[in-house]
Amino acid sequence: MPLLNPGDLFPRLTIDTTDGQALTIPDAFAGDFAVILFNRGAWCPYCNAQLRSFERASQTLADNGIRIAALSVDDKETATALAAKHKLTFPVGYGADAAAVAALTGAFVNPDPVYLQSTGFVLDPAGKVVVSVYSSGAIGRLVPDDVVGLVRYVREHTAKETA
Image (cartoon, rainbow, N blue to C red):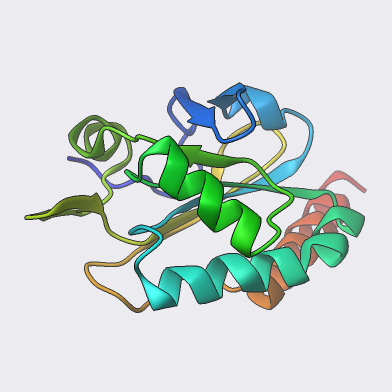
């Protein structure tokens, strides 16, 4: 399973979301920066903390043209309860086929029970990977302040190159 590197086009991945939509990444975020968060599941305290932190920062992220989506192997009921508990306003995907997602993205998979390890991607407006953060366990993940700073840097750097 190859890891996604900066400059790679994020593979097309369609996820079912708790609000009844089918979201195809990266197409759904075309023209905007995006953060894609794979989380271990509603049972993981680190994942809960990360999702809450992105929700708390959602206005700052939106002000910077950054959209968010999350995904786990949880069933619809569990993912819906998680989204409601933390009042998540971004799309929350559920029922991920861990092996299929790993084959596309290089995410690590826990073998038993099967779930995706924490993985985060920042995508540019063209759907290309700006940064990928792969974790093989509970810790090591994207944080909102770093994402905002990175996107601001990329925009500034891109503006200078085209000036």
